[in-house]
Length: 317
View 1 (tube, rainbow, N blue to C red):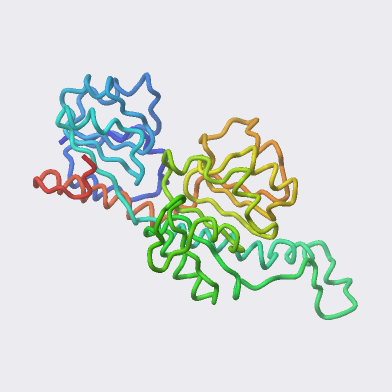
View 2: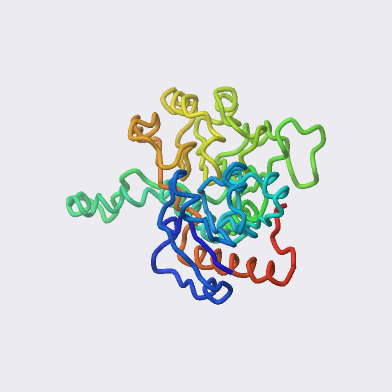
């Protein structure tokens, strides 16, 4: 089967593609694909691999050879699933490949923040320790994770991995029930209670109508003013204007974001333009350890192989 990868540049160039090449007769790699190029790149494709390229109903109707869409991610809002189903096109995704990578990112950021690692490195680099009258230069000090409460919003593979590591640090793990839920499941607490109690809130829930702007002015008012918010899920979970106001008004101590509502963001994005010392932003890389990326591509190859054997592995439709 002839396969086309529409946005291979979303992966590191050093990855091994042998698993994919073994299950297709031909694999065309396009670093990026604009909306205007989709039909040209896919005209003869039986399989499309896409991370973020949009495949809408109009496009799918013009691809008569297409049999399978492999989304090289967990989220599938870039594909019109209903249209694919009507046209008899199978759609697959992948999940759980990045739980170690995301959890490592979360704690790398938390440790850097609470241990003030960069400040202590700078004190030596700038000659401050060498001038000290005692053996220890405290600088900005440090705080332990032990004893702190971490609230987890979204308790799937990623959230549960973060919880496991948090317990190893002797942290108190709070698992949120869905907002506005009428009953609380065993082992969880009400969303509003978690917001008020947590020292750290880590977001791992999907973006949906219910979760867009979940963290807004009202939410920030309910949080501890010493709390830290870290988002490795989706940018639209947070209202940017309200977040910036909360940071400026000392309603929130720090926000660490690996995602924004538009990616890549415009140069004048409100959060990037603010250059707030309380705000740390990285370029959607929490998922992207070399190991996680390789695992993802291998899982895509498994999905293709399963499809060829008439198995419904990781099928969305």
